[in-house]
Length: 620
Image 1 (cartoon, rainbow, N blue to C red):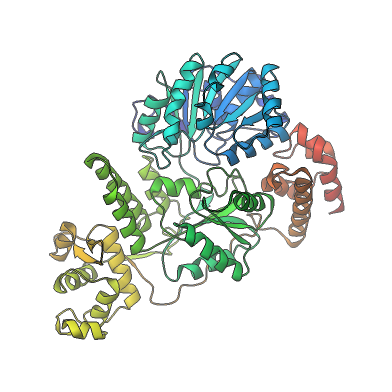
Image 2: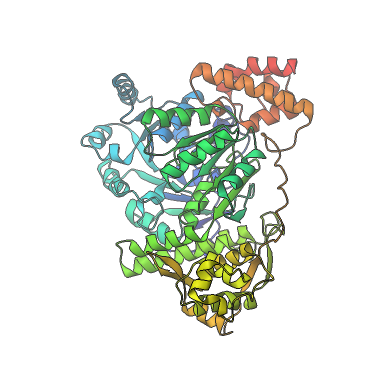
């Protein structure tokens, strides 16, 4: 489902369905012959039609929905040069390689390009041969580039990751503010912009900053139904992550950590546990970062443990899982990061760990920002939405989509819908916990208060005389772990705050006082008193379950793909993605003509790799 919006429309719920442009026959012909696809993904045809009509377009489409196709196809259909503004060199490099592998004339101008490469790029531009030119916003702003490009047939400027232009976006980059000036200096060429995450405030900011006139706005459904959503409170997080990975050996995935030090220590721990794990963060040497990223792109079963510096520039379709070892920075960041899994449409898993320390850190970061009171209020509201997602008491996907203004029914597939999360009337437990905070002077943390409630007379409790309080031992029916969960949830819903940023400890908020006095009800998530049952293993390295013979053939095709990719110095998925290999296994094509009808096999790749894969299939 997609919508065409007035730029003033605040929500997809108020949108008018997009008019379906009649696409020239050449569009579908190129879709099949170049890309190997029989049909468009949802939302692509409408956006491409509007772009071919020549007007300004803003498309908000989830990661994995094929945003790049929306400017790649028009570039082939209408000719001329499409200038693509992209935030990262790695992303530009990968997309250029992908286009060239399909026989599309594409190049990039960036600081990593050699003099010979830049000379060849300009030669292709002057000859009118180049269709896609990828540049960073910083390179676009450099003296002379726009002036030089204005002498040639620049048809449009496509802005990827457009949310970076907005101060409300989670990846704000000031350099994006200069793109509008470049558009003007190119004679007001058609402007099209794309992003996967933009709430109403961010959309309005993108429209104001990038477009000279109101664009047609396509707001695609934010739902990624192939991605399983799961949140778990931290409880020996390194072990939790390792257990999650153990059930997904042989799969490619990303594990996000909040700090550079955390990525390195967690990667080392996971490697010791037998996982193919490598760290990635901006502080590593460039050669090390490139080596680790190339391994991730080129090999199966490699796990990158990274800060958020990794991901936006990675266009790998067969990432089977994304895990967060620490709570994400925001709902937008969470959505963007999990969106790197399952871009091929096959099943993918997520796991997000969170704890009260994460919550406190994020609140402190908001409070310490040098921003206006209005902005701080918005940031606190966004943090509240994230905490609500972590401690959701209804369908996780429904909660996530509601944040982006999209109504949905319960998905039936997230951890809450599956019944992994039990809920109960938490008024009494909340009042016990809040009373413990109040009676001890609002200065102690969860561990101390859990000892108090369970009646564990620690030396500190006796020294402070708190073993004589009425609340001492009133919670003996629950474990310390269960009480820690209660305190974390009360913190998440805003009933508790930290008494001191320096020393920690809990203090009641106005909402906490209302709950304590019985003026407000609360439902809590039940913490199991038994060890959690082991999670069912996911469906193997290829997504769906395969029979033994099919698995053997799939591994054979992957090995062939790996060898071909290494020989050409490209990522394995640039030969063929997993989805294409799976269809080969299912259909067992015996001739080149039959192989050409497989999803993702275009004319260029059929001629380049067809004989090799037919031979492997006939031997299989």
